[in-house]
Amino acid sequence: MLKEAGYGGRRIAYRVLNNYYTLQVQTAQILKEMWGAVGLNVEIEVKENWSQVYQPGLGICDASDTIFWQDPVGAMVRRYGPGSNVQRVIKAWTNEEFNALCPVLQSSLDTAERRRAFRRMLEIYDEVDPPGTALHDLTMFYGKKATIAWQAYPVESMDFRATNMI
Image (cartoon, rainbow, N blue to C red; front, side, top):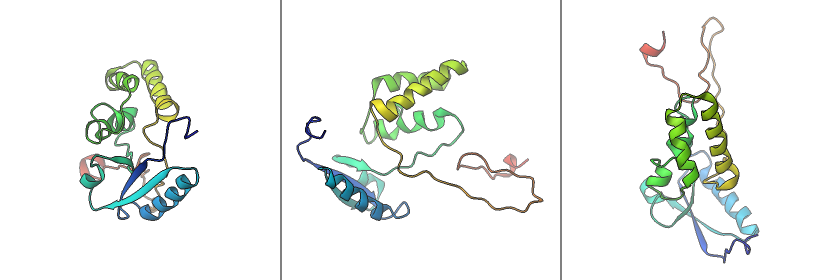
């Protein structure tokens, strides 16, 4: 498959921070070995900051796809759309069809239309032209007294300001 894709063994830079994520360097080392076993020439570069990670020549890097609000705009458009870090700063990926669907999610009030657009964006992300892959899924655990009437927000970002605790 690598031959069919035209890969000739060129070096692929995998830039990581020094354990910004839990066990990040160790995970990178394992992935490098797995990719090497199938013929990819991946080299790990440990960097001090995100500016160094995003320098030209980047091949692979780790990232968080935090959903700031429960809507596809909060993840897909924010993280991978035309104004995103991926397209505007890193310039690591772009997809014309994906970008054309972003305004539908951002402005349409038609639930069915938004659902179709999001479904197609997920197909592009997952199968047609993947800009990344999910390696870890963040699990959140909470503890509280049984007498407290509170339920965790369904995404990892929670707002504990007094105005939101009513």
